[in-house]
Image (tube, rainbow, N blue to C red):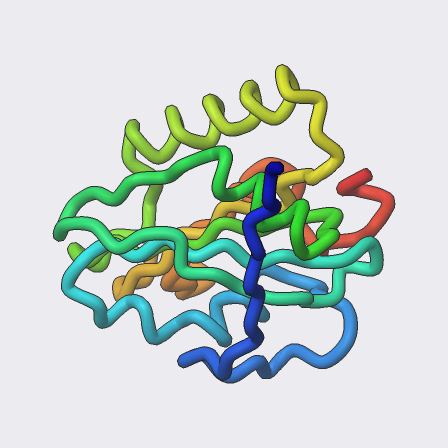
Length: 162
């Protein structure tokens, strides 16, 4: 006789206050919610899951690493998104150095994740990859870097992410 293991999912109050009501419109909104990770001494990787209307469903802290690296398990990103029935996700992490520009490792992770999702043919889509720092990185005085802003600019919209 075989038995199924019980999956126990609990909703718990997180440490970040959601200031976003309704549809997520920009990387700046995400930065406003998760800005406090800039003060962490270790790199912290967070994934934010969104539904088909770009509304926040849930976030999860995927890993906490050292002062200059952390790990990512692509199966966890996909698996949690599948459980939450999410359509999109945003990866957020900090650079304890304060520098929000992507490192070569960050660029490699982004490319590898995109390839992984394409190979697996999953329906969960990456919307953005945001790096939080505490130093202004451009003339707009932003203290974060966004893959979406660098590639497409403007606001998130369903037409640009589908």
